[in-house]
Length: 102
Image (cartoon, one colour):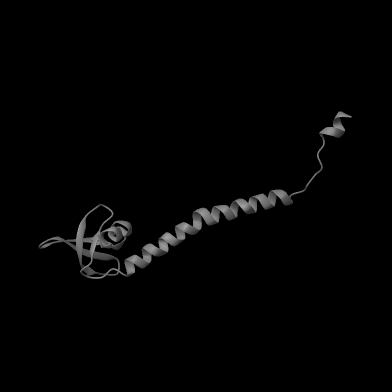
């Protein structure tokens, strides 16, 4: 009698596969997709950099864009002081806060 009550019917692999698929979908929509959007936005921001624009680097250095090449930018941080940085070192978030009117 005890053996009959303890046995559960075999549901197969379908519920496990559905749960695994649901976990993958949640992971995609909450982790991967927002990260891809952020990368796209940063790439677009770096392509739209123009001479004369005030920017802030990831390290917190403020400067005016003097020259823009394929992979590098030149910032003027003071009169006559020019520094060359990689384009990826420009902080999109900090520069947007700087560009936003007060």
